[in-house]
Length: 500
Image 1: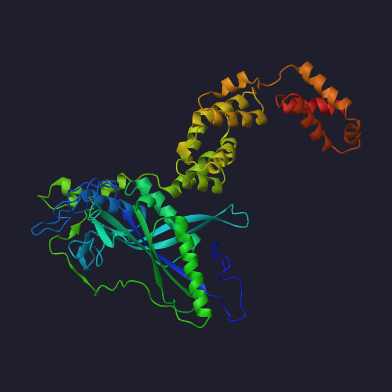
Image 2: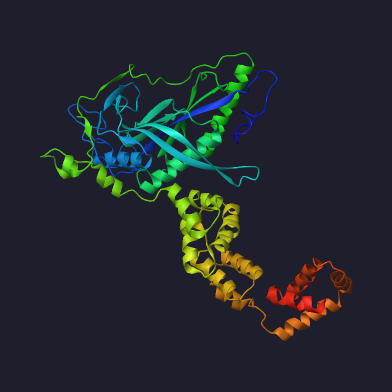
C-alpha cells in the first residue's frame, strides 16, 4: 500500500479490520552548528580537511585536558529555540552519555539529556497536496527539546584490507539535536518538516544544512497503530541524509510494519533506548549553562563576552521562511503555492524579487516566467538557480522589451531560449540580429491580413455564421506570416473588421 501522499492510510477500509493501520512518525534531527571551532575545544571545523588534521588534545581525550564551552554554539542553540517558539531554559546541564565506540575517544559523549537548553517548541511546515498537487497544506509538529552535544568522529571501514580507519576531525564538533514529537503520519510529512527546519536553520545561519556533507542528519522513529489504540512498537531508521530518502525510508518502514502485523506477526523494538537511567551521569568538568534575559540580570564580575543574553539574540532573528511566504503573497499578490515554491527552492525567491525590481512587468507575469520558463529549463538540465545562465537582470530586459511593445509574447519566449544558449548576449542584441522586433507598419499588417482572409473563404464564412473561435486560426496564420512579430491586438481588430 502506498503512503507517499498520506492519503491512503486512514481512508481505504479493509475487510480484515474495522479501522486501518496508520503510521506514527517522530524525528530526531542532528544539526551541525555553523561555527569556526568545535563545541568544547579551539580546533577548527572543516569538511574536507586531511584526516586527523583538526584534532586538539581535548578532542583526542588526552589526560588532563578540560572542555571550554564555545559561546557561539550556545547562541546558535538559543536563536534556533527562539525561532521554533521554544522555552529557553535559563539554566541547563551537561551530561556524559557512556558508550564505547572506536571514534569516541573519551568513551562518552557530552550532551544535554536531562535538562536541555530549549524545550516545548513548535515547527509549522507546509507541503503541496490535493489532486493536482497545487494546494498548500499546512501542519505543525511539536518540538520536545533542543540539546547541545558533541559529534563523534568517523569510522572508515576498509573491507578489502579488513581494517577500520578512524578520522577524528569531526569529533567534538557542536551539534544541536532537535527532538520532534511523533505528530507525523508518513514520509511526505516528515520530509516537508525536515525541509522547513533546514530552511529555518539556513535563514538563521545556525547550521548550513548541507545534508550531503552530513551537516544535517535525521533519525526517524516509526510505528503503526489503529486510531484510538495505543501506539505500536517503534523502530528507528538512522542517519538519513536527504529529504527524499527520508520519505522513502519512512514509507517503506510503515508498509513493512503493516505487512508484519496483518500477517499475524509482531514488530520488534529495534530502537536505541533513551532511558536516562542507562549510561548517563552529570558532566563534572562543566558548570551549569546559564542564559540571561538581559545584560542587567547577569551576575557582577562575569565578562560580557561570556554571557549569552536572550534580549540580544532576539534582535538578531532574521525573516523566517513562513513569514517570507506570507510577505510574498501580501506584497506581490501571488498564489500561496507559488510562494511555497519560491521559498523552498534555493535562491528562487531572491531571483524573483530581483526581476520584479528591474522590470515594468507586474509580479504575476514575472512569477509565470520564473515558474514556467526558468524552472522548466533548470529542471530539464538539472541545474540550481545559482547555475542559471540567465541572470535576473537579463530576464527583466526580455520582459521590458515585451512591456514596451517592442516584441510579442511568443518572441519573448524565443529570445529567452536564445539567451539560455548564448548568455553573453543581451536581449536587445538578439532581437536586432535576428530581426525579431514588432512589425509596426499597419499597411503591411493590413496586407497580410487581407491575404489570409482571401485564401481561407471557408473559415471566413464560419466566422460570419457565428463561429468566432475560428478567428484564432486566422490570427495564427497571420502570426506565422510575420514570424510572431505582429501586435496580436491589432491583428485581431483588423481580422474582425475584414470578416464581419
